[in-house]
Length: 223
DNA sequence: TACTGATCATAG
DNA sequence: CTATGATCAGTA
Image: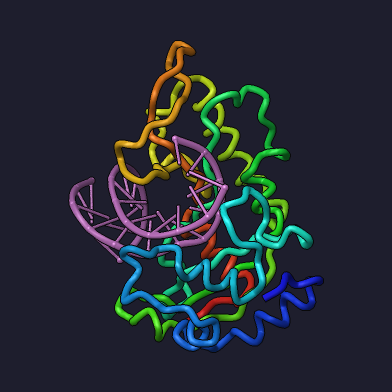
């Protein structure tokens, strides 16, 4: 699948996928679906990237570079409520003194997102999960402010050596949580007295309540 | 049951 | 290890 040249083309591809099951899309793409997501948590996202023509690989750039759009799948239950928080990006833990919100990875990644809801309750077999209606989203002033506030608070803690005091509950809409192969992975960070320390790599996540509000504004109140 | 901390696969 | 894609699962 080649990259979509325009937003219109991207949306039109999404409309073709809406209502299909993951099993049907996998068959079209020649992808073998695992029995569950235990050992393949990212397969759904990667399949949608393939189906929509996003650039593959682990490059630190938008999924659709030409359009500046980031693709995110969003697992939802039967009522359209998100089942999980949404990973945004890795958090920088060193050399963050001069970081500014508007040039941050979080701000840039979230500036233009294509959300693809997937009906994905754990009791439903992977192949039977249905792709929903995708939509483009850009944070409004209020959402932008909430994100910036949380981001600045978290980054200040990181700069001041408070990394190990940060819990997942810190932000209102944005949270900092471990993002690693396991709890023994280490990366460099700033300690309490400004000294280099080793700590668990972290990532920024959107809390489920925040993505729930995005869905609600897009589709209205369900149930 | 929701949330926070832990974990899995793959590419470079 | 870092960055991509995320969900799992124990516990409060």
